[in-house]
Length: 148
Image (cartoon, rainbow, N blue to C red; front, side):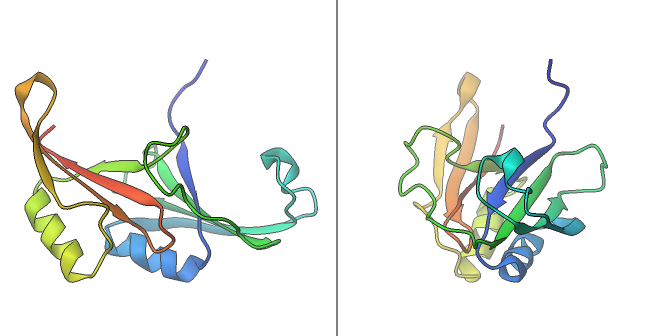
């Protein structure tokens, strides 16, 4: 049935701010488009006439999944991300890193908001791993994992 994961979608309030944030994490902008059509929301099940989308990718593999940032313009993006991570549905997006201590320190220096401090855990199969969750500019929770 399914072939591959194409994208993970994150709604944002300020596209330029979000692009800068995700580029600072290492993402590359690969597509930037505006859909301006009164029926654009029909396929998504929302009332929307206009939106801007930006596909961002880690690395250069054209078949790798993209992060799809979307800013609804007419009407504007609304609401808030889940207040806690134990809600039904997609609650966070996780990324692997080689050196979680270094990445954690770099994000702290940039004053990124963390959900909790970095934790060192025993992972699947008894392997040591590091885990930390932080928020993007709109409060969407992202996760870093090392040692997997």
